[in-house]
Amino acid sequence: MTSPLITRYVAGLHRELPAAIADEVAGGLVETYEHHLATGAGDAEAARSALAEFGDLATVVGEFTRQSPGRRAARLLLATGPAAGACWGAALILSRAWTWPVPATARLGFGAALLVAAAFLVAAATSRHSYQRTRLAAAACPVLLGPDAAPSHRPLRPGQAGPRPSPGAVDEWSACGGPGAVKKGISRDAGNNGPASTATASSFLNGLVCAVAWVVVSVAGTGYRRSRAAR
Amino acid sequence: MKAEAQVLKGHLDTLLLASLENGPLHGYAVKEALRDGSGARFDLPTGTIYPALRRLEAAGLVTGTWAETGGRRRRAYQLTPAGRRRLAGDRAAWRDFASAVTAILEPAR
Image (cartoon, rainbow over all chains, first blue to last red; front, side):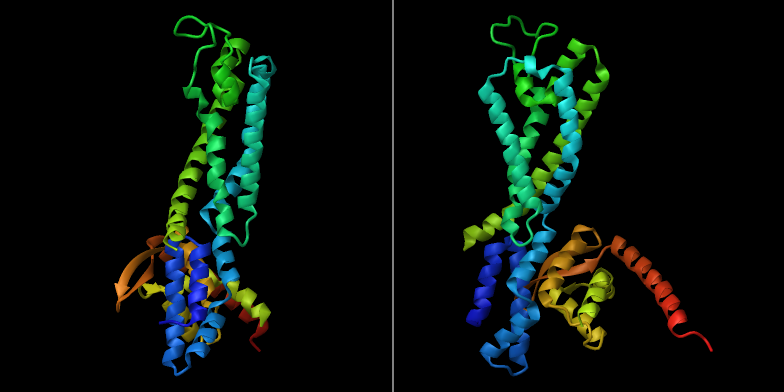
């Protein structure tokens, strides 16, 4: 049986942090509390001393938040974002993206998804006291990963016969999928392999970073979800 | 003693590595080792020890493993080879720094 003060603190740890971290920190708090009990302090006094020695909940959660995988991944993606964006932009211009027959709603939807992903990354990267907020990075990764994974999907244009797109054909899915996806279009249309290769390489690297970040943040979040479910 | 706390924070990683030099310890024991080893001068908030240990683990300088001792599950940390190398480097750097400061503050007469 522990003091209500300790119980409340431990509940707060489990509410704010992933299960494995909360368990470890809670164990340390209970040990501190028992240490004070062993020195002859009363229950309430031992609890107060343990909490004073441990530090307040916000400070402890803040320390873990600042080094959370989600926050680090978001910062990495934001730092590499301008370079990836520049490559996307260059490839879009070189492949004359404005001529693609992409519905306006698809363009708007893709743009909105990118903006939301960027907002999620900013929220995760700037979180200082909320571990939960850093998990927004996990939601942003698939959105950023989508355009980079698009090169593997090359559906035919509506009405196009044959298994292979004709030279110079515009790949609609690629248009929705971003510059990384239009590398072949650039090569055929513009006869310029340099920018296409750069865009493809940066797209691949960006995709790799996003995929790794997504996995890391998702794995780190598993414990958090378990912790919430256990309560 | 805010200034001392800031100085201590700058050396926290090295102090944590040093406290693990003689074998695995769990978070609370690390805190006790720092307090006892410093003659009670370094009495850090226990709650800040755990994030620091996790940070060292993420950097590959320590490894943490769950173990049950006395009916209680605890996460014990121990130095990795990289952690030992880092500690040796930090220790050498500290000796150089301390001897230089001492030479200025207490010049031979």
